[in-house]
Structures are given as structure tokens and as C-alpha cells.
Image (cartoon, rainbow, N blue to C red; front, side, top):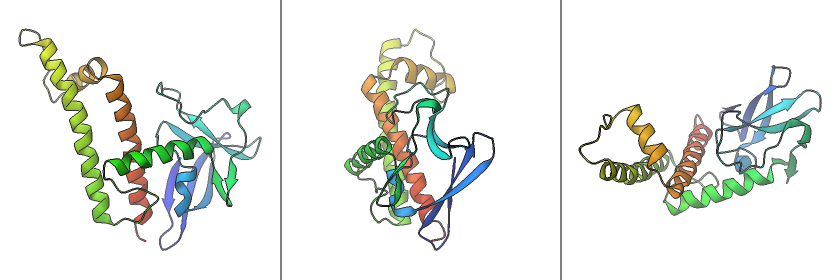
Amino acid sequence: MKLINVPRSNEIILEVETTGEDIKSFGFPKHDIHYWYPFNINFFYKYTDAKNYLYLVKDKSYEGPNFYNVDILKRTKPLGTKNGVMFRPEVYKRNKYIISRAQQLGIPTINSSYTQEELQKGFQTLSDAIAMVKRRAEERCIRDLGRDFYTPPIMSEEWDDMVYNSYMTEKESSYLIEFGEIYTMLNVMRKLIENY
């Protein structure tokens, strides 16, 4: 799934794979993208050639929460519309929640006006929030392991695996999922104002 900005236009193009392994493109209004575009990158749209409609798919390797209530193709239904725009209620509900979380952090959101500078500040605020959550887990890890136990170098993939998999609380893990979705929203927002 790929989003392509149409410069100096109110339209965004969604490119998706088809079940026949081709690529199909659809044009949608930019201002209503949060009605249907999933901010969790582990979910994406495909097009079924047999049934002639778009449907939402979960990445096979993703084991996290299925906030979008994605099911197998046999049980999917065509996406609905709201005010003439593609609409997926579960995506919209989750996106509204992510938008409210971003607002709580002082990050600009996709359903409001914003500048490139505000967007950059939003990325920095999000980066700071992620670092704070990781720092808490790292502090628990260091306190738990003490000095006598082997610890991998702090700036290594092995260290991150240990901290994220063994010392992150359930609440902190859910924050990181939310932060990932906010990051996707910010990237979509950046794409929406490119060449505008």
C-alpha cells in the first residue's frame, strides 16, 4: 500500500496490490484520510479482483492488537462510505483515539491545520516521549541486573531486545504502539503538505 500526493490538489492516490498481484490506484480527498487510512503500519489495503472491492489486511507476522477487527478475505465486506468518502468504522474509531493521544502530547494532528515547522516539532515531541518510555524500562533493567551481570552494550540491538522484551510494562508497550501510530500519522501529514 502506498500513498501518493497529487501536488496542488485536494486528492491523494492510494496504490494497492490486487489479489491478482497487479497494482490498482484509487483517488480520495486528502481532508478525510483519517476516516479510512490505518495509522498502524501492520495493516494495509488490498483489492480483490474476484469481488471488486478494497479490503483491509493484517500483516501475517504482526502479533499485536487487532484494533481494526480485520478478518479473512472470505468474511470481508466492501468498505462503506460516509459523506461520499471511503469509510472503515474501526479504522476511524482507532484513528480518533490516536488523534486525541497526539493532542494530549501537544502534537499537531491530521484533522487540523498545521505548518511544516509545527510538524517538525511534533516529530521531536514524539521522539522525546518514546525516549522517556524506553529510559524507564532501561532503568528497571539496570537496577534488576546490577553490576555483576553481563549486559550488552547500551546502544546495541541486543540491548534494545532485552529492554523491550523483558523490562517493558504492558502499559509502556501500549504507549509504544500508540506512538508508532502517531509517527505514521505525522508521516502521512508530511506527505499531505509536500508540494502543496
